[in-house]
Length: 158
Image (cartoon, rainbow, N blue to C red; front, side, top):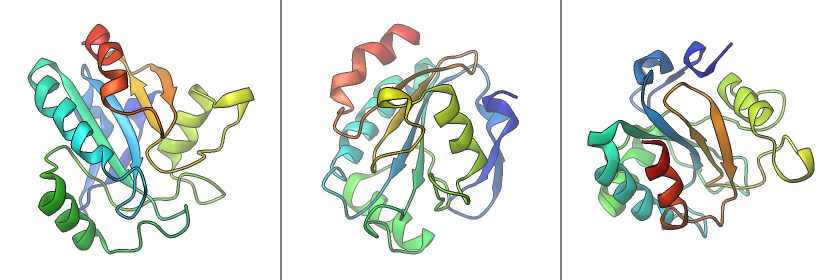
């Protein structure tokens, strides 16, 4: 299995295969609209706009598993992201990232890039996974790692 074997529903409710992103560098992020890190949407959108023409895509996965910080419907989430941060990178339907119901993509990401001391759990919103153009998960970033702080590492793989 590799990253391209997975699919997820878009925020509009259509199934999308990650196969569509083959050959692109990816930053996969679990997001939330009511989190202390929500302002990272601005930096993520800037990274996407700066690098999308060079084969870079951000995939946002809303998640409500951390203190109910993403309580809205998909439509409310999409509206919030567009209205407040002009998000244009792909957003997906709300998923679980931990536990028995964790989305298979996130089970794979956590296995490929464990956290501190080998932890598989996602600790909070805005945990980020960097995937190279060959589909290899090369790094996990903590929620407090801002989009700006990882810019050079993204540039290095695109």
